[in-house]
Image (cartoon, rainbow, N blue to C red; front, side, top):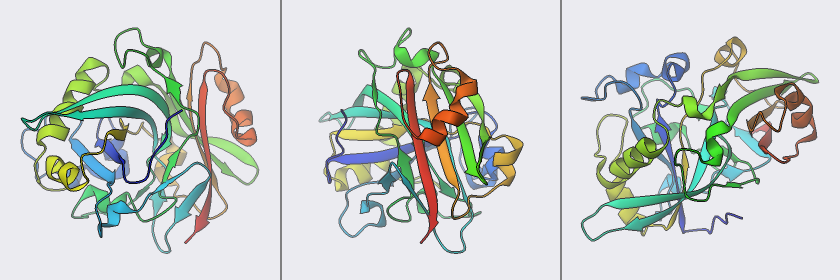
Length: 276
């Protein structure tokens, strides 16, 4: 069981770790000022840090509620979240040890030209969605770990039916995955500077008291046509399923979303959207 102790955990996401998502989300321009990003993820962003007086200090997590700000266009973002233990060295480097994974919704306000990614990520309680079902990964994200065989699917619940919102995708299909992903995250937490839409992560971690746990979301999948063109509305339900196809049949996922219950081989998140 992963416990998010107030004041002792941090939330970070990765931008651009699934080919084509940034283009669909209309966010490619936001990263045009960055240098030497190449292919793959563009950087990391914070969505929660316990820094007194900072807007990110508000805990955005909910396993059932999805808050929609008045006048904002919000899309769900189906992802895998890693619960990671963090350790800090005297030379400023940060090491991470992934211990479990779960379904996550990195719901985002579509706002072109925002100064930082984080301002589109945390607008208060219910901004972010996290399943209560964590699945352990003993030994971390290494070749042959449990996470390798899982897939990510997402669904919009509207008018009594569940329709595919994101393209059902293998977790191993992330651009960066496995040991290479862990190494990249460690490098960003240790050295990412303030540039364009990105922020100085070492400085933020220091201001947050160097939390020992982080919930790191490793990138949103591509949308279906429905997901690409449909913003969430009050009364909608949004579901993210991280599932093992050897145990859970994909055709059963809409019914499982209706029940809202995780089961063996499934970390399920279902949130009801409401206006705030």
